[in-house]
Amino acid sequence: MNKKIAIIDYQLGNLFSVQQACLYLGYDAFITTDPHAVVNADYAILPGVGAFADSIVNMKKLDLIEPIKDFVGSGKPFMGICLGLQLLLTESEEFGNSKGLNLIEGVVKKFSNRDTEGDVLKVPQIAWNQIYEPNENAWENTPLSI
Image (cartoon, rainbow, N blue to C red):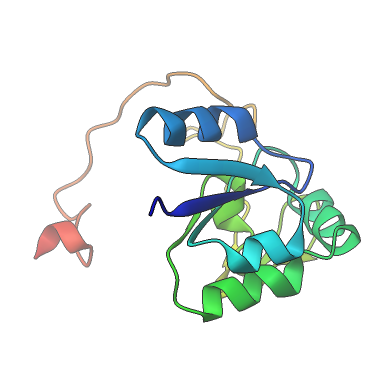
């Protein structure tokens, strides 16, 4: 029997690209706003593009918050992509503080919009920047230092 993957639609996601990737790999993936379909799926993916607070508002309107928490609590495989991963945390500082799903304790922190010289950078910025050589302790206390 082919396992079913629920791609959770809360009106702010890159749904079709995620679905096409799953289908390409041979999975039975479907896009849904139905809370029961989420809970009853074998796997679930929470994709996302957009603003954190708007996403939570949409999830509340669609009655998806408890089904997502129930799904994750069941131990079945769950994946958050981009904003979908951020939404799993306790809260976000994006455009002020917003509460998240609190499935992972932590805060999505706003990062500085200034470079090492103090010049203002465009945030968010999706492009290449200058690459700086890290100092010798850059990887200290990270998994790469093991």
